[in-house]
Amino acid sequence: MRHDPSFDLLGSYFPSWMLCIAIGVLATVIVRVVLKRLNLEYQLAPLVVIYPSLAAFFCFTLWLLFFGGR
Image 1: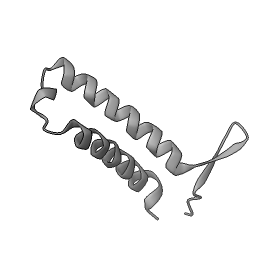
Image 2 (image 1 turned 90 degrees about the horizontal axis):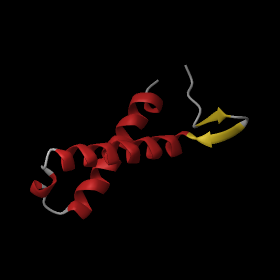
Image 3 (image 1 turned 120 degrees about the horizontal axis):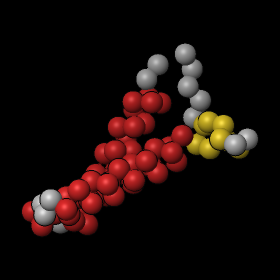
Image 4 (image 1 turned 60 degrees about the vertical axis):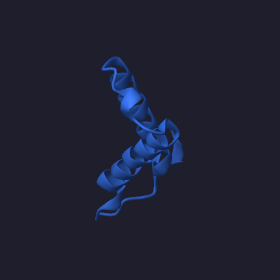
């Protein structure tokens, strides 16, 4: 089965990486809210490194799960 790098959304083609980035950022925001409510965010060392890395992790994982395989 062949996966195209873009998908049809309301008649316009969007790159699939754009969807993965949007979902990755949304997942990172959800993780931040959960960590904040559990009062665990203060244990994370440099937040400026942690959150972009977490967003990249979610983005790359989604890409591999949905668009990276054969």
